[in-house]
Each structure stands twice: as structure tokens, then as C-alpha cells.
Length: 338
Image 1 (cartoon, one colour):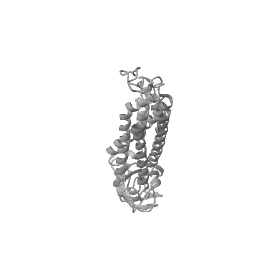
Image 2: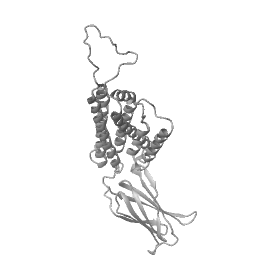
Image 3: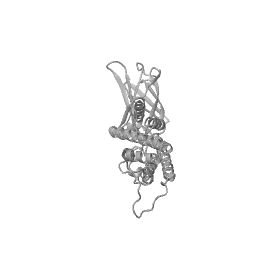
Image 4: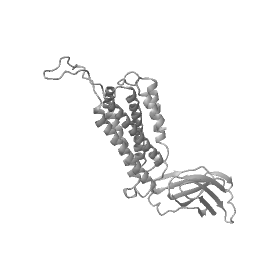
């Protein structure tokens, strides 16, 4: 998704006749706006922005994704310009747009570092898969940042420049100066070297984005979850004049099959109990309440395929409303393993 949107932004910002031309008002700006909105919507979905503190998660995630989009689109666009524009034009546009690129680079690195350190303590960085992948992503971003500064401050100044318009080259040689036989041709090696370095930067950034996508599928370590091995769970609790039984299988992070059965004092299905409501909360990470959908099997027995996104000690609230003013409820503490 991010790659396709980046290519769309690259196409929209491409001026076919002049490197210094600004994007036209019209379809190009529509493409850019749709791309930014699409990336924003995708970034604000999933558990990445549901981790406490939510305000920090939303702000840092959105800034991180937008910075990656701007940087990636700019690199793709610059690589295309090195194949179609002169060295002088490439140098001019790199110098002109480098403040924006550097701002995106700094934003990407800072937000990535804040997100990792906020979710994984320093002592746990290398003791969990989330921390290891996070460190790998940060190292890749550091390599990409190094390449960006190398391209801007080492390779770009080597590109040939044209004389200033208000200072035309003199046709008369200065005294005691050798007369040049012909203008020195622009060396193509500098532009080719910049193109190769930009391609390498794109590759490193793409691998970093792949690590970020992997990171989004890994749950951060939760405080207090290290001693929770999880496994199939089955327990009963008082429920009005009878009991309610909760079964969770396999009791591990991810999708679980949850059965709720209300039993009367005689051990049979409790009469009058038709439907159940399920509420899941993880207090250690301020997640929830999550309310998965229940499927009624028969009166007093329902099932749900509920997703527990993180390991830890989950609080499960089972509720059944008997009438408008009467309801039964029971609370369970369910350990979910990694």
C-alpha cells in the first residue's frame, strides 16, 4: 500500500517539461490528497494506535507513516529525474527540496525511536521479538539516514553547475591565464554515482518499511505477562441462582474459541438465559473493553471466536440480561499466553 501511494505521489509531483516547475492544480493535487488520506486511514487502524497512551500512539504513528511516505516518494521521484534531467537540474532541485527531505528523515527517525522505546523498556529490547525487530528497523533507518546525508552533502556538490545568469563567462582570457581550447564536458560519473546511491537508499528504506510491517504483526511485551504461560482455560463462577462456565481455547495470543454456558442449581442449562455479552480487558496495557460478537447455540449456551491481541492476564466479563431491569454477570481472570 505504502509503495503504491508513494509511486502515485511521485507521478503527481513530476513536471514533464521543467525540473523546477511546480505541480499543476487539478488532477495531480487530487491524487496527492487521496494518497495522503488513504495512508492516514491505514495508519490509524489496528492495535498500533490502540496502545496506551493512545494520544501518543496516534500522533507518533501518523507522523511516522507520513514521513516515510514523503521520503520514499521523494526518492523514487529523484531516481527518475537522474535518468531524465541534466546534472545541473538535478543539483538545483536537490538543494531546493533538501530541507523538506531532511525534515521527513528526522521525523521518521525520532517517531520510530519514540514508538519503540514507549512500548519496550530498554532492558527488554533484545529479550523480545518486538524489541529485536524494532532495533533492526532503527538500524536500517539509521543506514538510510546516513545515505541521505551522504547523497546531499557529498555527492550533490560534485555535480557540475552552470555560471550565474548575472555573471556571464568572460570571452576574454585573463592575463597570464591559459586559454581553454574547449569547454570541459560535464562528467557523467558524478550523476551516475548519485543515481546508484539513491537506489541503494530506496532499497534500505524498503527493507526498513518491511521490518515495520512485520513489527505491526508482533505484540509488544506486556508487563506481567512473562509468567503467564496461557493454555486452555475452564472455570465456573456464581451466576444468579446457578453458575456460568467460561472456556477459552487455546488460551494463546490471537484467535480463541470462547464458550459460555449458564447452568442452574440442578446442573442443567439455566432457564431464562437466552443471550450473553462478552467484554475483554487487559488492564496492564489499558486495552479494552473489547466486545466480540456472540453466537447463540441454544438457550444458556453461546460461543464466540474472540481475538486476544496480547498476552497477559485478561479480565473477562460475562453478562446476560434477563429483563430490562435485571441482569446477571460474572468476572473471570483469564491468562493468555504469548
